[in-house]
Image (cartoon, rainbow, N blue to C red; front, side):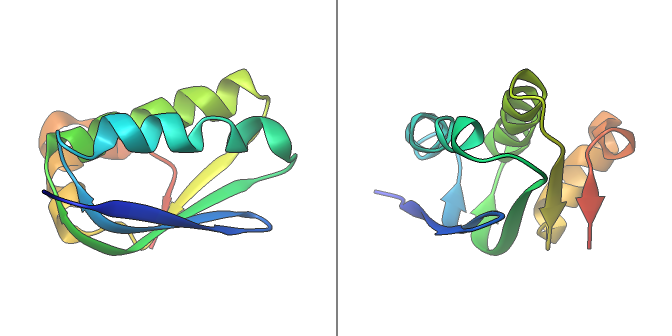
Length: 100
């Protein structure tokens, strides 16, 4: 079984592990409440993501939606090459708030 986890920071959280169809649904449930707890910019660092598929893009979009619904800005840092490639092919690289 694949695994993924988060480590909370004052300005967001770090993601470690695999972002795929097996891990993303649980990760969504684990993280959505975090958007309502704080204010300001939510920074999500993906440096420790070891593998990602299109489900990884889906969660980035879900996090963008959660940030918008909570009236927050969001930034993705250290996005893995795999996710950047999927985003580019799908045209989402133009709308994802990525800072690498």
